[in-house]
Image (tube, rainbow, N blue to C red; front, side, top):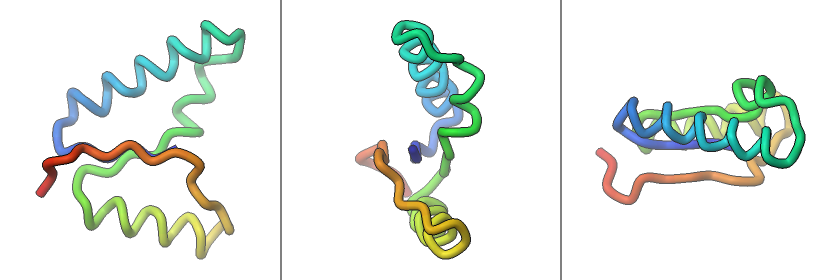
Length: 70
């Protein structure tokens, strides 16, 4: 999963929400830190997608984007 937002508070909030969801479904919330990558702008997000695919062959199953980012 990849979360992209230019506000650090929002990225922290997304992690908290995902950790709560993991607890709700009976999973270990510590894995959220490993499963959730973050980016602070559009360029960083594109680089993260390319890097994940080229280095590990991973395609993100979920990408959350802020609609108004620099």
